[in-house]
Image (cartoon, rainbow, N blue to C red; front, top):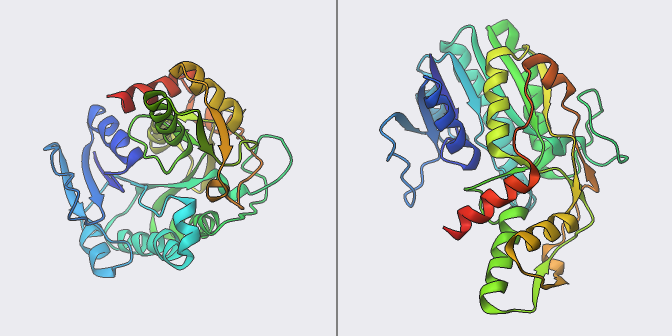
Length: 308
């Protein structure tokens, strides 16, 4: 069985590639060409360059035959998308359409898993989001992902591509960079502890989020490849949330430090969603998936990884 993973050198991509290899897949990893980063150190993966805004690059990648594609490549940071909304749309929405168009020319009866985001739900009351909720994206990042979802779900059945959408709720783990909240907090707490600083910079601490372990998220993706229903959307979520303030408390306790919190306006996002927790009943019923890592285990893994 042959799988193509786009964005294979990213945070989730590296975890997914290792899982697919362990499960016996032949993996092609498509990565954005970057002179400063060469992922070709893993001889078990066939690495190919992919620039989603370049039709010729997409054509080169999609000319091969695959049994499954997991499309992770994206402008994945909401802050990056806000700074350049046009580029985010070109990559996330138009790039996804270009990729599917190329695959439709050469692949039949393959499974295509598109990794979207829970941020497409936008704001709302403090109840877990369900797939039947009407999306209301409130950021360029979320809007570009929702447009990509529509592309994935509309029209591709006639091309014999079985499409599935995974709406991933917040997740973390070893390897995530410090643009994201958990590794950012760990880094600031580590520096404060080492230097004896009395305070750390924080943004808005009131939003409520869940934080899955990346290994559990990857397990959900693998299960959806095997048994997700074509044309369906699935939340990947734990349903258990904490405020960002509580998250910081847990991290500080695990790291043995108690600094003062100083709000930095530069870290406050106007598009923060107050409550973003998911209901994954549909995913559980279809695949039998359930998260295996507790929040504390997940956070300790990040702390240990950054310490090393």
